Image (cartoon, rainbow, N blue to C red):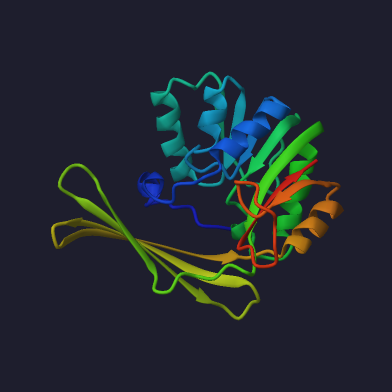
Length: 243
């Protein structure tokens, strides 16, 4: 399992804005807290939950990503509500249950057989009776962008960061190799280059349902996106709420 962004973690929040905030807030209003966020990264989902007044435990494997999360938590003075924990999604044990468990943009990293099942079983152990688990997956209808996506951000000190994302198929069904190139530039001068390599996996929605059922979870809602569009065979993403 997965990419840790060990050197690129400070740049992670500059890219890939998400559209799940309103959906997550609405779900929190139904479940209440405390909340458990798994694969929390830089605490992008965990911080708004804590800012809403809930106790939050945020779990991630990457020390570098959690360091960024800690800085953001301190800057917003939310340390009293948000606890950061370095652990693997598949086997941590908090010996408590949560009305809301969130695992967004995590399942792509469960490439090896049994990893997703182990995580779902662990989520079930930590889910309170009547609680909800929110997760999403990219489906086999997703296609890598061609040509590769290249984006730039100004760093505010004369430097510019350019990120290039490249995918290539592997021999395994629904598994892609991914490369993320982070180039720090001043004008045309390359100051630093960071390369993150990993593999990512696509999941069929029926496969996710079956794995979740085996873990003792039932589908409450399923959508094609965080705007609650109906899931179709052509949908590149699936959003699940389990109970």
